Length: 143
Image 1 (cartoon, rainbow, N blue to C red):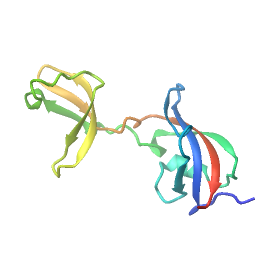
Image 2 (cartoon, helix red, strand yellow; image 1 turned 90 degrees about the horizontal axis):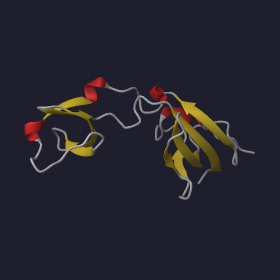
Image 3 (cartoon, rainbow, N blue to C red; image 1 turned 90 degrees about the vertical axis):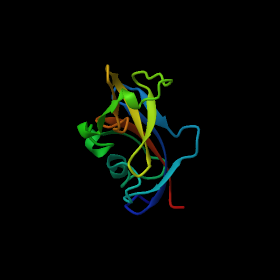
Image 4 (cartoon, rainbow, N blue to C red; image 1 turned 135 degrees about the vertical axis):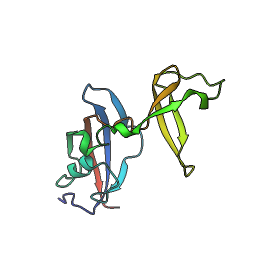
């Protein structure tokens, strides 16, 4: 039976959870996820878990933050002047917004804190700084 190796195109079903058991994503009920192992299409820890698996194999892996979406980057915490927030916009802690950078490219942020004169926004990926747990089932190897 063929084992997964770097460069193989694979299809997997997965369920992603935080260490407290809270689920953040799953392919169950959808088409399996297809990607090329070792091509950098997946977070490093997920990619590294596939080599050696056979079709039908299931495993649960823990991925440290550094091998997932990275550690929380303090430089991605933004103090946004309230004077630049439209008066009709009601902000709440936890609210997701989209800002644009200098090149006009959109990027997501989350309202972390509301202060008198500034809004504290977090532009880190929502899973940055978190250890992740994935249940993986190898569905197929090859196209």
